[in-house]
Image (cartoon, rainbow, N blue to C red):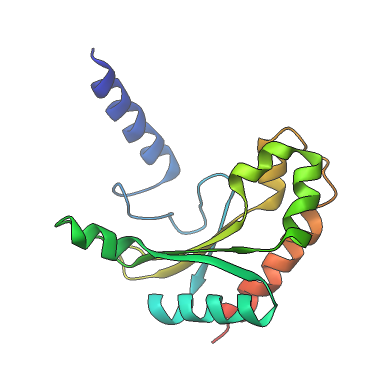
Length: 161
């Protein structure tokens, strides 16, 4: 069996175990990829992302980039449901995590992903700081808890009706 076929079978198995109906369908209700905190948004993809960006700026965090993956796909003749990424943060939040595990810098600044799944549901996803700490070998990093609390508060405001 060639490597491509093995990879395709493995991906199919992972998708089946995760409860995904099809590749790219997004998380099944109540399920998210490991480390991803996915929250349903009652707003459109654009409004959700605009709210995220506004709240980030209101909290005096830096916005490093806003990337429209669907627009990028369109430029190469592909179709992708709305999918947009915001890269944001500041040294006050990220440095303590990197003090626990400097390799966490690969996952920082923080990111917020807004996407619309195949059923039309809009999601806001962020990385779980505790998962990031575990990923980088620092499961007891005290910086993860305040980062998680800040992200939870941010997400709550964004997805409020």
